[in-house]
Length: 594
Ligand code: HEM
Image 1: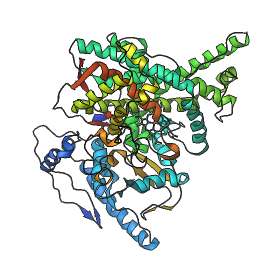
Image 2: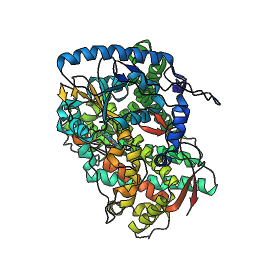
Image 3: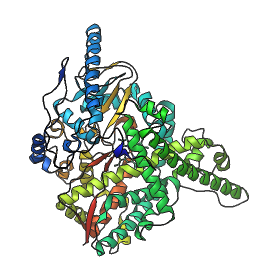
Image 4: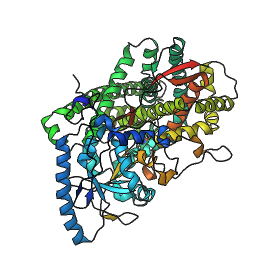
């Protein structure tokens, strides 16, 4: 049986129902370091009632009010020791580090509302530190610092050993986890693929097919007037899409959903997807659990569960690689006998070819050397590369879309505007869902500025990767004068950045797509160092355009034919603390045909 994160020693017990216990809010001050006060019930209620926030769901500390006393004591003790040692060292070196406002144990305490915890801390100061044994953890919402680490001094910041250690079991040597030549090689091959017109055409067709399939599933729910778990459906659509693009085969999890669930690829795909979700959650836990290495050694708790999930993920991916390698080998042998040359357009085949025919320099020639490639490619390396792309494509755009539909239900005017825009952009010719999806060419999508703005506004408030970091490779000074040492980790916090009044003005926490539109109605970009949902600089998201096209096709088809509403307007919607920003317990919607 899989380990249940919610009963792990690192998950805080929920507050008992009817408990109205209050907490001491006096900030603990140790050696000039001020700990954030934990909010009382009344403070939480007040915070909930604040006008701008009424617009947004917010994680409540009340869900986690039973403090693990060991974590609090450990935090205070660590704070005292590190602060003392740090103060002595600083006096000697003359360096200035960002103010310390808590410890890694506070992060652990707030794990299930981690992003809101960091947001609260960021309101007071753009750059700060959380104390941890061994290295400094620096957090920033300052665009100047973000630009420094992501672009200006790119060579000095990377994934580093810290991230490699934490993510290695899941991501291996995939593009997300590596630096230097291994990164450059994968980046070159993958950007070549993403930019190619063959991939654009292929992915566009896959988006349209799957959007029409999803709309058909929604139509069934709408006809029966039954609520549906919409995030799950989006996940199936995204899984089918990224599978088709990466592996060139159709998992048809959506088909299984429309035919009542059971069946072949659908079940297998769902099991794979949930193993990846769990593995991602346990991987994130390593960032806040100082004992994870010991637990891995002993194979206990979340580490035992992570190992089990990674095994399930590996079995699934290796089977695809093996099957494709065999297929390419057979096709190449047939081509030698005078058959047609192989012309697979999926990423796996392209990586198999590129990894051998070019020595990895990215300029692969389709079909050439396929048999040798299939035989010689390192399956572990391929697993790492393609799993990274699947993880990137499976979760991110789905989660952005789920939050977008949540916002669209909270703001019905958004649905109306997208409906009108979609009809205008396609010339209002189509009548069926299939036909309409086919009209969503890249040219039509390019005209949909309002939808682009509404999706971007969603990502500002609900960035699919809410927290990101880089390791510092040699001592440095950040813009503003704070020092960073070799081995320190600098986190930038897209979730918090999207909510800062000092970046977006007094309506920072209000969902307002219009902030992205020029007076003439056209979409206007922001600095990627301020709107950091896709990262920035040389490692900016490779799938950004891919993601926007996919999200726009799905949103346009669904909003053209249905009006969506929440099953329960009053229910709060929160995120689950994984590497991405999954909606916990799903998104339950009703759809009405237009
Ligand atoms: C709304 C959707 C998406 C968001 C918000 C997003 C965001 C990001 C972010 C923040 C990174 C940097 C990660 C890091 O270095 O730690 C990244 C990298 C990347 N993304 Fe996306 N992504 C999205 C969709 C996609 C899709 C659909 C794909 C592929 C199909 C993709 C492929 C990649 C790849 C390959 C990288 C690694 C780039 C590198 O390290 O050079 N992304 N993305």
